[in-house]
Image 1 (cartoon, helix red, strand yellow):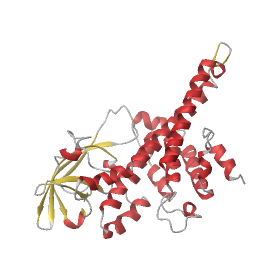
Image 2 (cartoon, one colour; image 1 turned 30 degrees about the vertical axis):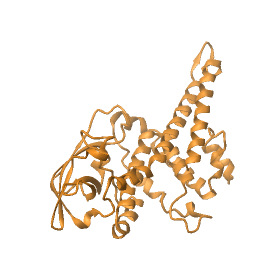
Image 3 (cartoon, helix red, strand yellow; image 1 turned 180 degrees about the horizontal axis):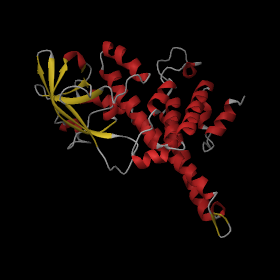
Image 4 (cartoon, helix red, strand yellow; image 1 turned 180 degrees about the vertical axis):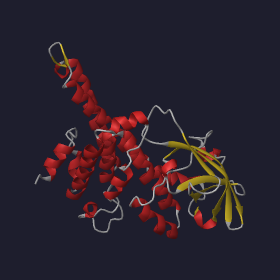
Length: 320
């Protein structure tokens, strides 16, 4: 049976600063399960999915089986903790992004922006109902904030409206570039209360009357991630389906803030994937009678990539 140190060395040979040493035994075991699952199930098909802009059919379900929110392996020696450690979350995002950054983004949308909309924005009753289902992947979600004419300026520029009529809300507007909307079971949708001018959050299901979802095609990046436009025409949402703790953009910002480190984790994993693919190529490609990895110009570039990666991993560890 390999030791923790041996497993880490095999999993993360690019970790020259030994940052992964701070992971627990249980965390390393689960990360190995994750890496093995990716390599065994998707290595042969991931490039085809990128070219065809399709998601591996069972990827979401396979991640759910890992039970990465509540797996007992993540709480060994951390009794009483409510969530997995940030160091584990760093290496989980990193490991998936190193394999394929689209697959990491798919998970990030669900477990980050989507899940956290319910975590920060939901009432105790909403949290009790939705969070376990989202964490186990029984339900899938997304994050419907950006609009056709509003991306970075959504703090003051939402055009999707919510009009209260008794114990119901009438939602009208459009959302665009919403990752995973076409495969979501529930969508947190953000709209402006026409009576107060303040944004609010609403739990909407794609099958509701007045909801139309159009898949956006011909993307050049993150092609495995399905992005969609959502049209909302007189969609009726009961007050009990309003996210009770979303009452200002500051509340939405808490959700956004909670995922910022995760973006760094994924970017760092993507760097590691580039280094791994490059190293694999240059040790096989021959010119002038030898592998191009034996030329100093190539070695300099590899050293620069490794140095940048080590710095990024150290920054992520500090964030964690």
